[in-house]
Length: 92
Image (cartoon, rainbow, N blue to C red; front, side):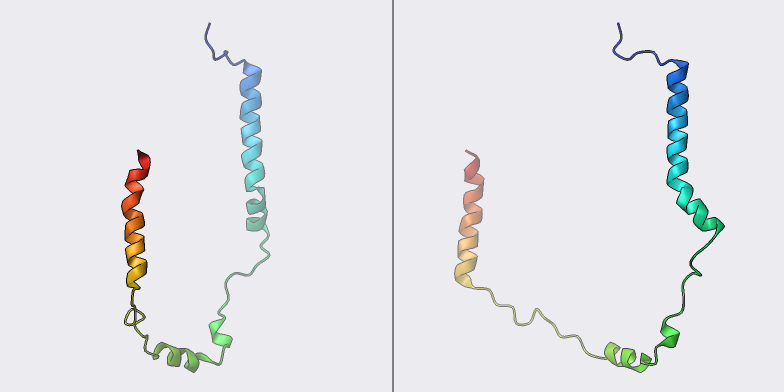
């Protein structure tokens, strides 16, 4: 009378083999890469660039404060506040 049928040994074997084959196929490219590498690994790219003094100059440039000149439009703020005050009343 149960809703879940009893699994047969064949069903369990197919399920186990299916999951095993799926996991094996998912890791197969990684196994091939470990066995025969195509890439030599990370390289030191910064050693080949002669423009490193430009990087030091870029680090010395002062960063300006972008929040100094922030001014809000008073009319836009009032409209936004009126819209926000109406939102809780929309549920009723």
